[in-house]
Image (cartoon, rainbow, N blue to C red; front, side):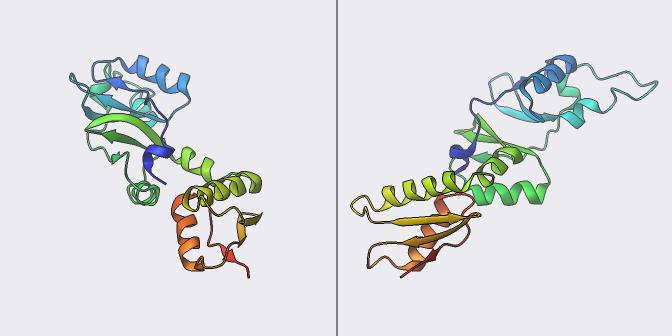
Length: 186
């Protein structure tokens, strides 16, 4: 699974000269924790998060920042839309970020949050079964005899002769998020 398949698109974005007040409303109204900040030509120049906006807002005696450019983070971790979801997840864990902009040709085309990744893992057994069957139909269009049983996220497969267990299990782990190693039954 690729970042482009997981991302929310279009991304909710802000500009450097947007007011902090506007940024707060945008994040709050869209129920997001961060937004990419774009420059004059639509290029990614930063990220602004809830914590960036809260800093200084409640500090007595300190005048609150006025523009997004004053509070945004300039060091931004981003991925391409073709980045594998595992690489994206590792980046989010390593960098301890909640949201990552997704780029295509240096333009922001979407965002992926930890919540988006969690949604993939939270699928029901029926939803997971359908995703596995769809992946198998795509990879093996002429094989209609797959039997898929999912219990508590664990998958048991029974399929046509000649399909190596390692190959099929690897295919499912790479293409269906939330799949734990599958067991092929005889």
